[in-house]
Image (tube, rainbow, N blue to C red; front, side, top):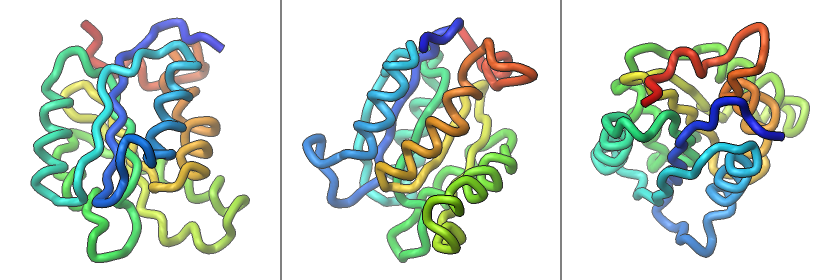
Length: 167
């Protein structure tokens, strides 16, 4: 598969414990986007801290070379799951249907446990941001069953590519 309009995509893993060697979820996203024909623009692992997350994501949003951000981790209900609190205030627009669709698809795989997944997405400064759980399986579901098509300009009847700030 190769996309019509290749995008520059950042992958940001939210974790207090993962390293480049143990970041399997980030690997899934990086490999998937490159296989589709997009460019891995940057890859980071950021501590699950509201202000560190906002700093890294804000810099990526402001970078004209970053068209999309795929985040993994920090979307559950523990005291250290801060992705939603940190990132949602940065959005110009929320994409409510992403979380709804992800949980519907995830239900097929993990049953009612999907209600503990606070996945979400939005647009900020012409950049689309998808926030996924920290498991490789969830990242694969999000990419394969939703994100890949929505970042492919040839997907009909609609996709998000025409809403992005492309250089």
